[in-house]
Image (tube, rainbow, N blue to C red; front, top):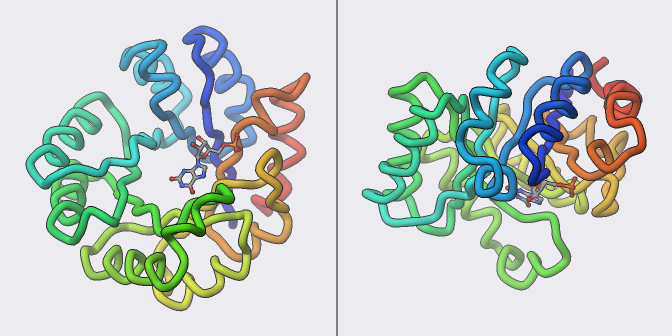
Length: 211
Ligand code: XMP
């Protein structure tokens, strides 16, 4: 089954909680990032806890090992189940995230290649492949790969094998959900759902990938 993950990039706490609640029957996890946490505060995690869905902290953690440890400790203490970290910071920094996450029963997903057009400037030419290899070597639970470039997902799948691949970039960014769903373990969707006139109906429509 391919998971449908709601990216909750809203800045209003009540609106975010309400949309997440209405979409909950059709989704498998909720991804929360800086826009919502910086606007609504970490208390949003408690608002979402009642959904009974895994909560992924998209903080793209990218610091020295000690700071990564402090960030990941705070993430899991707040009640998140997983964290997204950058891999370009190197193996010691990524391993620290993995150690903290696994000690807390959580997961780490490493950004191997990003979905926006400008990402090719630095991620192509072998870098994404090296980061995916690093994610495997550091025992990360999976990687993030771009729905906007299905061919690249195929290449990164060769490296990570059966490890999880979550993929943002469908809908508003141009990726086709049906093409990508067959290649990855979960598709991350934000604006196509929460900006829809009826977010729950849109989530239900997209939840066809879960079959
Ligand atoms: P939209 O609205 O475009 O939202 O469906 C996508 C969400 O995913 C995040 N995003 C990424 N996160 N690597 C990541 O770790 C990526 O390549 C990437 N591309 C998009 C984006 O911040 C938003 O929350």
